[in-house]
Figure 1 (cartoon, rainbow over the protein chains, first blue to last red):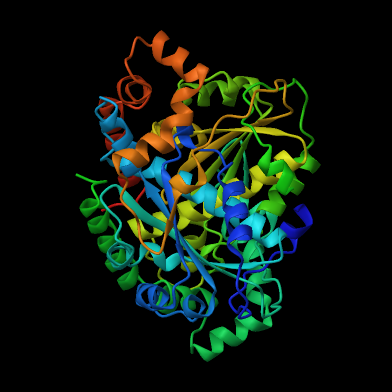
Figure 2: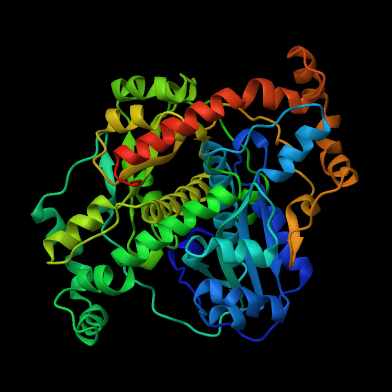
Amino acid sequence: MIESIKKRKTIRKYLQKEIPDALLNDMLTTSFRASTVGNMQVYSVIVTRDVEMKAKLSPAHYNQPMINNAPVILTFCADFQRFSQWCTERKATPAYDNFQSFMNAAIDALLVAQTFCTVAEEKGLGICYLGTTTYNPQMIIDTLKLPKLVFPVTTITLGYPDEQPEQVDRLPFEAIIHKEYYHNYTSADINKWYAYKESLAENKRFTEESQKETLAQVFTDIRYTKKDNEFTSQSLLQALRRQGFLD
Amino acid sequence: MIESIKKRKTIRKYLQKEIPDALLNDMLTTSFRASTVGNMQVYSVIVTRDVEMKAKLSPAHYNQPMINNAPVILTFCADFQRFSQWCTERKATPAYDNFQSFMNAAIDALLVAQTFCTVAEEKGLGICYLGTTTYNPQMIIDTLKLPKLVFPVTTITLGYPDEQPEQVDRLPFEAIIHKEYYHNYTSADINKWYAYKESLAENKRFTEESQKETLAQVFTDIRYTKKDNEFTSQSLLQALRRQGFLD
């Protein structure tokens, strides 16, 4: 499995081949062994197989083609609703309508999601994370009928690979690691850690096609812009408030 | 590896045996293959081995004994500082001082943390997640000298196991899974899904020792209380604001 992690790649194109329920359920059950805060398991997973449901989810994910192409979509949700209902039914008064509880539940959901992905890839399946989940949470909440104290944190598309992309680059190990204290980066550090990424033909072509001077400008001006970040931050906070996780 | 995940247990007691740098670095490098938003790798990992640094971190984690007992502590941080600095050095104007960017970076950090744990457990090491990381983030920020746009999301303690605890219970598969839509839980559902947990001798003893009528009351009145949740929610939001991730 360690070899499978070392060689892993995100897969965005899938064969039109069903994933048997027994296999999917076994992988999900395994993923539920992930660590969970106080063994509360404050997460839920919504399984989407229905073609019409995929079409309804698609706009929330900016119509990325993986949504309609993948046999299975999994939406991993922070969920304090089930646990709170248990409390209420047991003469206990739950108070999980707050931001800390959201973080606890979001962490739970993400540890399960990543464990699931590791298992699925070991089984020969391919996955793609959809970061768009937190960009348009309200659309997903409405489509999947998520009640209060349930919040979509991440989504993966899942299927048998129909492509074999090259493995993408990663920053050098030393760029990520800090011993004892956070070390601030000098200009020389930044030059060193980003040199390989900037040297890649693909990134040079991308910068040129985008008519930008630097690769960083592709990120700030096109892919993750101030306008989008600020707009989706407000949507995210508003949806958290509506779901009961922020005062 | 799938078997290792199925059998996994959280380990809180460790042998006084060092973890070689080569092994730790290899496991971390593997974990950096986890999916990352836009391949930006907006996370950092702080490695704590120093005894004095562990003692300084300990109060932030309510002096849980794992901190001083474990040979290695890893603090996984959302980090948009390095990426933003790269942008600034490349004539690009970063705008990642917002909540959406925090979520993107927190998700990145958590996928890496969980991949690391899977790898470490496969290698025979034991881990324990410290959910306290988001309860006292400012103490951790100060101790590890985290600059703006860097935020501690989770911490794990790591070492060779010096205990073999029983594997803890999990809710039934059907309690977690929703097909196409979120299904609301009936009283009968709640009774069914929580019956096994409530039947465990350990949980019955725990409820009795806590002088509570139900297990749920142990959670709401002692372990995850309204007062603590609301207090730490405010600390968390305040620290996010100070680190530049909230207006």
